[in-house]
Image 1 (spheres, rainbow, N blue to C red):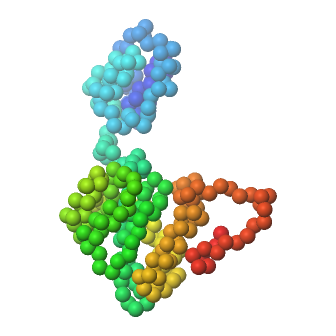
Image 2: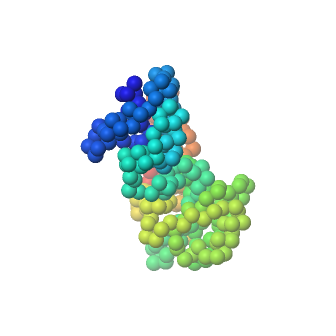
Image 3: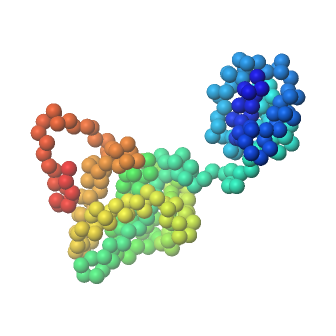
Length: 276
């Protein structure tokens, strides 16, 4: 019985009894005080599988005490505080956890600059859905403004409700007018920390992919040329390019086509820049 009680407290408190640090005295001082008749072997075995070990890192001493009491183990708060490991990091939700939990409710926006053959600089505004890394909307301009950017955000959701969260950086282009447009769509802006591009990872990864696989291989002549190239590449990105994060599938799921189904032929995409 004492071994099973040790195992339960190890699970709930997140420590291993008997390891260095004096934790072994928990058994000697506390478990001996527990009424053995109040804890049955069946009750312990029934609750062992129900303990959520991932939640114990956010539990305080009273919560651990109450959970142990539900298992028939009467341990004081002071004992739990004495032997419970102290967390060095905050118990609040991490940024990575937030992104993973709310993937279906997040869109990210960002700008991409593209130089042309005539030394002009064009700005590409991108709206990306986190759920399947889908490019919802992109548009090109030579002189963006807060009002123009806000209108493009509205244009990205013409027939459907906008997601709950809008992830963006601290660029000055996102002014008060942009904030009003986002609020009118029912979106809550989540602004990343200064110089922390990794907090907007999907949009930054998309921009890097656009540069490596498309724009670095083509000399852009003008705005019309850039629009055509991007449209062809985005279609390829959605329908043909596989992604590890999507279980090696495309944004628009593509079925497996075995060799037995017919002859394998090569498809030229994006003007011959890519093939499938």
